[in-house]
Amino acid sequence: MYRTLYFRYNAQKKYEDALELLYTGSLTLLKHNQQSSGTDLASLYINTLQTSGSPVSDEPVSKIANLFECMEADNPERQTYLLECINWSIKVDPIYKSGHPVLHKKFGLIFWTEKNYAQARYHFLHSTDGASTAALLIEYHVSQGFPTEVDLFIAQAVLQFLCLQNKDTANVVFMKYTKEHPDLKEDPPFFKPLLNFIWFLLLALETGKVSVFTVLCEKYETSINRDPTYKEYLDRIGQLFFGLPPPKHSPHGMFGNILQSLFSGDDSDLDSAMGSSGLEVTTEELD
Image (cartoon, rainbow, N blue to C red; front, side, top):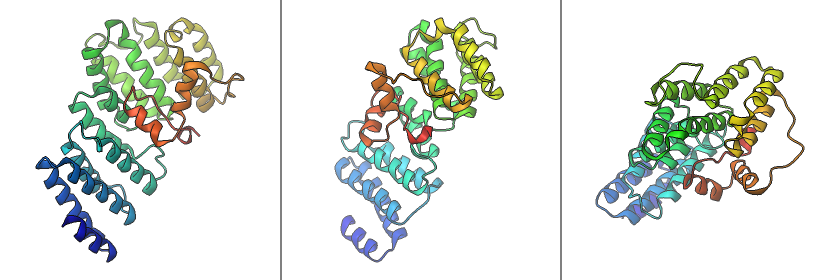
């Protein structure tokens, strides 16, 4: 019945009626544990948003999140629905090349509630909610990290935000994390050298002085070498914020492959990213 009415409304270009039908139908089916049928209507809801050219606004985003939250975590079509939602937001608002940050925030909050920290982290990385990202990272580290990784959790996140050219959120995340993490709760300068490096890096971004950036990377080389990916992130940050040329050597090996996936915009890479550690960033986002 739902699909019959949907095709009728769609043929008549009665998109508002179609959207209301699909949303209420999907919600009803999902709440009655008819996951497959409910997800099918949810997918048609996204398709209709795209067909009608509906903008990313509070109402559809809220409804998208409601439907996603009603889908069981082991629903095989849940991830497909999520990708359809993100692709819709990209097509109607292409300035956000990895998806609208408001939509990512909604997904991040849902995954966080489900204690799926890796996927929550991925979506918060593509949002502009620094306070929630910091709170998530604190909970993630406290529940699943080692005490010695307290600085690694925030350093990676800040560097990735900067690679996405999201400097403002990077600053908020760093300050909230260092002030509110139960193992830190301190103001700069910090006891841990890596935290001082990140703090000085954020300050250096305000000056744009390449000499300051170069000296920082040299002085804190030992801390930077704790994670081999940091060097690749910093190469990119040097290009974006300090006008440095790309390194003459191309990334290679395992970490080169990671960066290749970071800078790709393929749906399969996005899917892989949201199922792992949330490292992926598209090439277009960095241009």
